[in-house]
Image (tube, rainbow, N blue to C red; front, top):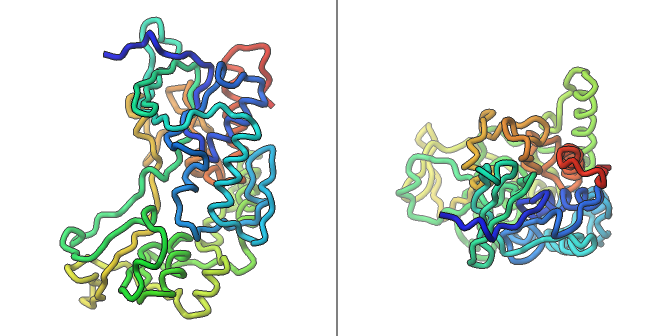
Length: 374
């Protein structure tokens, strides 16, 4: 039994305070909601910075600071064209402070449930804050937990017998532990390319991809990708035919380290192996590669376990949504998980638009004449 007598009431509760949650918080503030009393952001991390604070230190953005900004405040410039992860952490920390967003760090949301009886008009959010249980009742909930909490490793035969080390890119920090070792890097995206470029400086590397990797032209970075995604969004919104999105351009942005790896002849991929063995990997034709380490750069899945009690209708691999609003639960919005919650919504520059659209839909439902969603 839960004690709901100590539950705190808010108009809007945001789950997560990374780039998506902060963007939602900015627009809630701009609409006139009062911090702490009207809206609160709950974040599992003890410190600001979202998932960026957990990334490997050498991770870099694909765009200059001016094209990597949240709504309201441009990311400060850096000496480098593509800022490192630490710069993003600093920016998100200062962004949270700049707008005095009511973030409660160290608070992990365990579940979002439909209220019953006197709570029927609200969603009930149960959490643990620094070890103690806590409950909120909200008229609207925005889930903005991202994907970092659910690294994905595909199941491959032989994984259980491989005697070497297996790790997901989420656990990678530096290349030093792999010096002089034989490393198989799995994945055809930006993470795989960046880590391959780094690890190949100290280790014997093999790059393995499910399909041939598609390298973008050197002059295409996040700026171009965002422009393409925006043009596609405008075309679809106006009823025109789909012009194609960023997927049609390629997969790997040629940041300086990746270009250098290409020039060294490192960006040569083999097709996906058939299985792991005790000592490495083996392909369908019987050829084998000895390996000490398999580095899985195979992406993430939406971190949505807290929504399980709602039993949301599914649309393939994710909850069904109309815009950002969950189908069959109009009090719940999902922001920042990928294109299914808005074009480029999983990016720093793209999430602001979907955050604004979510708030524009939430505010009228609160029936508060003093609020104006801009």
